[in-house]
Every structure is written in structure tokens, then in C-alpha cells.
Figure 1 (tube, rainbow, N blue to C red):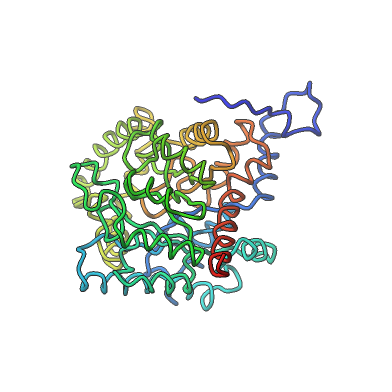
Figure 2 (cartoon, helix red, strand yellow):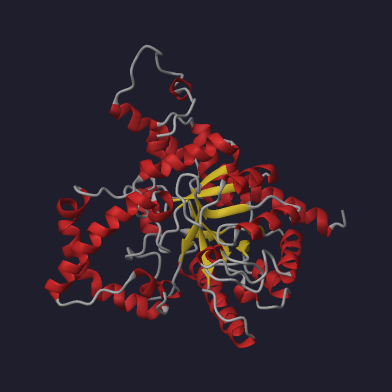
Length: 430
């Protein structure tokens, strides 16, 4: 575990320096911190099926994020993601993707304006976030994962901004019309050699409008070119450190140092295979063995994670309902037959990434994200209701209340402010 040179005494100045803090006292102190800071997660995937009058986030759905889970876990700000997977670079597919994206924008507006405006509100600025929380409500914000639905009409960036988008990535898992994806590392086949000319124009337009540029899925070359071009700070909405978890979705030290120089922030992601690939694979192998055994016993054909993610919203929901009894049977046996042999990636592993990033690029450039309902979550933080456990681990490691507030929301909101200030300058002709 990476050591931090923070003094725990600085977080407990009211205590006698010679008195060792008991475990109940530490937990109580952590709960106080958790209640006072604004907890903000920059990446929560959504399904439009969960934003209807009959089925929505006011209910205790099986989703990792919903209002009951947010309220139970002290989870304040959910960046709800408008995601459409990569498809062919054709006008017809652009049109399909655009319609899917608009449906997700409309779903968030429906939740915040019609279904539960008394419990959650859409924020467009950091001031909105603070005002809404002060009013006792939860906060929704909108990010766009993959600019593919923009098509080739850059005016759609302004449309998305008007609908609430405050960050956007130029690619996902596959090369887009704007940028190469990190997935090019699989076969070393690239489409643009980084950004396309359209991608360069998109960056200028995002700077003009006040949309944060998200580095979490594009290729390293795309990201380095974006960092060289942008006039405003950037974010990585859900990435970890490649030096700790060697997968192409994580940022290597060169990208991280460039992000620091840019003034941006990396939102450390709680995605098991990005946080600790080796530990996760050992756990995954043991779990696969158990899942296969239970499914065979119950006569059910399990679907792989990638196949499930490729389903339509309605088909995915139907599958999740059908698989629930099988999952319950698996859960009853997992501690004895899996976790005791190959422990899962947990909150401590996530904190190792945070420690590494803080030591490398400075605390002011580090944040936290989950990728909930997009495959994210670690043992101890598997849904919004368990959010306190992250704060508790940070307290154990000696982070102060001010530092924890910066990690949870302060750094990201600072970048949003700076991006919007740059946009105001550009629009004023500076």
C-alpha cells in the first residue's frame, strides 16, 4: 500500500494528541465528515426504462443508483450519463444514435422536472449544486459518454449543452468520427492517429460552450492532442492509474502529468478490472466457476457481461428480472466458495489508486467516480447506498475533511467553474 505523508492528528485537533482514537470514534468522525462534504460521482450510466411514470428512481430498483440508495448512502450528486455505443460512421447510424441520446437527456429531465422535482434537481453549474443541496435535495448532472451521436453536425454540441451536458468524451470503445479510442491498442489499428479534423473543431466548440472535455475513453494520442489544443481544463470522468492497473482504459503517468499541467482532474474509477486487474481476474475465475455450477443446477443460461451490455434497455431489464433467482442462489454461496479463496477488489484497492494519484499529481487534481450500472463498483462500494465506506477508508488513511471534500467534489466543481469561465471569455471575444 502506498504511504501518504498526511498526519492523522491534523484531522482531530480537538483530541488530545496522546489519546489513541478508538474505532467507534473514528467511524463517528468519518460519518460527520461524510455528512458535511458534498459527495459527487461523475459517471452513472442510466437506462430510459427506469425513468417512466411506472418505474423510476423514486423506487428501490435493482440499479446501483436511485434515490433511495442515494439518500441511504449520503450520495449527493449523480452525473447521469448519456451513452450510446460506437457504431458505423454513416449518416443513418448517426441519426439512430442521436435519437437514442436525446431519449436519455429527456429521461433525466423527466425525473427532475416531472417525477421527483421535490427530491432531485438538475444542476448546470457549481452554484446550482450548492443551492440544490442546501435545499435538502439530491442533484442530477449530465455527461455525454461518446460524441458519436453528434454525427458530423457540430451544432448538435450546442443542442446537447442546452439540454444540460456539461462534459463529453470524443470516443468510447471504438474509433469515432472525432477521435481514436483506447481500444486501438488491441490490434494497433488507428483511424485518425489521434484526433480527426472534426475532433479538433469539436474541442474548440466545447471550449466555447463550457463543456468539459473527458479523456476517459479516447486513445493516449487523442488525449495528448486534446490537452495541447484545449483552452480550458479537462477531466477524466472515470479512469484510474495505469501504473497501478495496467489496462488501456487507465491513464499512464505521461497523460496524468499533462493533465496536472492543464489544471484538470482525474476521477478515480471504482471498476474492478481497472483498479486491480490481477486480483479481479482471480476473483472472476472463481466466481465464474460458481455461477456456471449454480446456473446448470437451476437450468438457466447465463449471459456474458458484454452480451448483456449490448442488449436494448428493455431486453436488459427483462434479463435482469429473469436472472434474479439465480443471482440470489449464487450470492448465498459466494463468501464460502469464492471470497474466502480469491477476495474481490475492494475499497482499499480503490484508495490505493487515489493515494498513487495524489502523490503523483497532487490532491487538487484527483476525484472519485464509480461507473455504476456501467460495470463499476468494488466490494464495499457496490452501490450508492455504500458510499460512506469510501469516506471511511479515506479517513483511515489520514485524509483531512478539507481534503476529502476536495476529492469528493471540490476539485471537479473547480474545473467546471474554470471551464465555464473560459467559455465566457471566448464568447466575449477575449
